[in-house]
Image 1 (cartoon, helix red, strand yellow):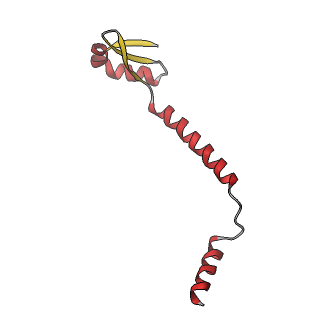
Image 2: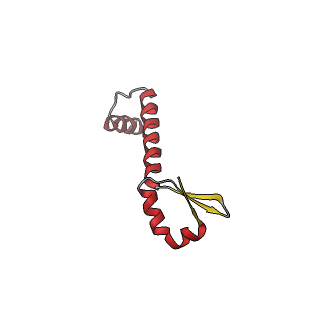
Image 3: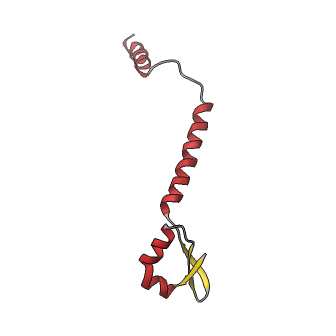
Length: 83
């Protein structure tokens, strides 16, 4: 983990963003205290997307199977309306 002051971050933000994208842990400090960190957003989204996908897969596996197509279901619905 590399720490940079707010002044360094202001003057070299593009460089710090590049370092974060390369995997370096970039922390910005004010008066010697860490106040912010830079990290790539894609990695976080990919992790969230994977977790969401796994949740959906588990959810789908728990649902009972429906043995009727959408067309057949609509036909049945409309048959009841015609009666």
